[in-house]
Image (cartoon, rainbow, N blue to C red):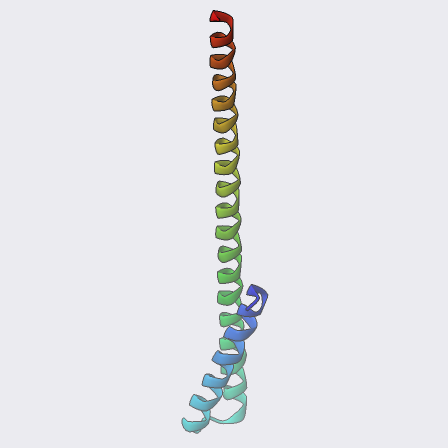
Length: 94
C-alpha cells in the first residue's frame, strides 16, 4: 500500500466510527457534523504526520545503506591496492 493513502485511510475509518457512535448516541445533526469534521481533521493531521515520519525514516535508512555500501567499496579498493603492492614487491624481489 502506498504511504500517501495513510491519511485518507485514517480519515475514512475515524469518520465511519464517529458516524456510528454519534448515530447510536442519538445526537442531533449539527453537533454530529461538527464532531465528525473535528475528528476527521484531527485524524488527517495524525495520518499526515505518520506518513511524514515513515518517509523520513525510510530516507535515513537508504542514506545509511548507501554510506555503508560506499565504505565497503572503498575498503575493497584499499584491499585490492594492498594486494597489488604486495604482488609488485614480490616481483621486485625475484
